[in-house]
Length: 242
Image 1 (cartoon, one colour):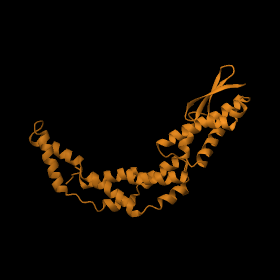
Image 2 (image 1 turned 90 degrees about the vertical axis):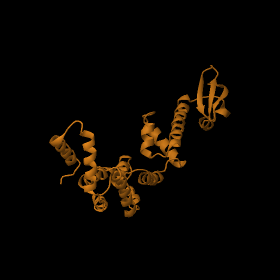
Image 3 (image 1 turned 45 degrees about the horizontal axis):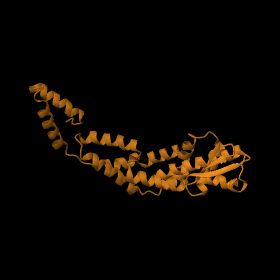
Image 4 (image 1 turned 180 degrees about the vertical axis):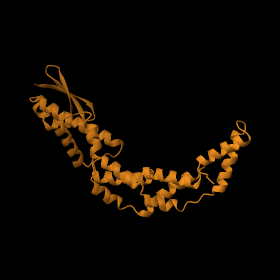
């Protein structure tokens, strides 16, 4: 069908008005690829629209990538929202890689760096999350092995020190809680114990503070022996058992 005229609708898109006054909105790259400016007619509309859809997907990915660095799995999951054509997805992924917009190695390095310096996550959790993003275990291990043991222990120490400032429990209870928290965050048990074994808490002083706080808080509700037993139970729950 003959092309009547072209109307620019955005930076890289044009409305192609046909002789029957119907129109197609196509990307500039598609127009150039099919030489529509020279031929001034459309002979294979299905093929043109198929190519245009690929460019549409590619442009959506560029916008998606502009917000933050993405890995291949994230891009594939994103594209699955718009197409079920695996070939189309593969072609878009290939083009993104060729144009330098999708770099698995760079993503891996950046992900680990951000998790180490901007979160409390430890190596085990970081590795698990990267495996869920379809990275190869050997590639993950290679990057994680570049992290010094001192760096990881400093992260643990920083986390423990922060929690210690607000601690109201006994040394025993505090260490148990920290152990559970840090294991969940993805740190090795040996590294955790090395830090926790050097933690000291003045149990007597802390117990006295908690005793006075509880007594002032519950003195109106309980009295005498009942108050003392109630406070003793509360202190026991906080790990003060002597």
